[in-house]
Image (cartoon, rainbow, N blue to C red; front, side):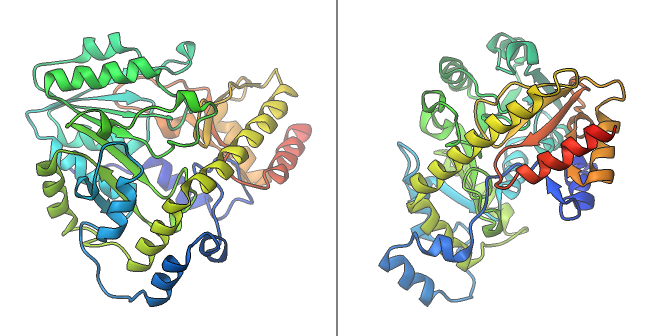
Length: 377
């Protein structure tokens, strides 16, 4: 494995995420305080929280937590779950466990950088499949079929998508899973925004429920809005694959934080309450964002996302999206992510886009600063 390049988005966040006054590009839902989360706990969970010790826990994750996670799937049990210190560790282990120099992978573009960079670094070859704005960023199975090779071992997708907020059609996703099952290909499905769909009817089945080589990645950070827990997981019925990843975890986090496992279990038992709150917040903010952009039709084009906490709006100004986003954060403390942070080695990404977040509370102050910038420009 060759050295990894800089993670462009995270490098940008290292500079601005906690410095900018208005984080208008956050990719997670509004978080909760400890007291808010514990208020959702039943008596047994509160007792478990009071008794929690600060020792090591099992590398696979606490058995109780794995069973709770498995209950969020239709067909899985605790043995089908491997927990990680966040989703990124799970993604990293999965790509290393699945791919080698003789393998070919297919990855959708645009994407969260590591879902592309890791296959590019590990596999012999990688093909990008474009999610196109003229197609509302939807997956086209003809493009996937055209990219297939005899040595294709992995197809990686992310729906609701980061950064576009797009969701594949139900029929398309099931057909993709069937195609992978027929050819013995693993389908890696990043499902961290599942549960935040605008329309419940668009909610996709989870890949791990569909067939033995379906791999579902999820985490407490995004749809649940609890990134501070650092609890993620991979669900899969391919136990040999899970065992390879578990051995890799020995060189990484080794195990999760025991208090975080207890808190994650509390949150997952109350998932309907938490997800309903976050869906309502995203819907409200999406409407606000639409009204904001409608006031400046000469500068912005915006289509509401199908789901998730982010959208990929278009900037029409003559100065270009890079200069626009740079000036916004430097002059008014409004943080957005320009499309340069989503550049792909596989395919072109529209250069006039920027990511904006809709999952956080109190975005009105950010809109006010943004309006002031536009009035002064």
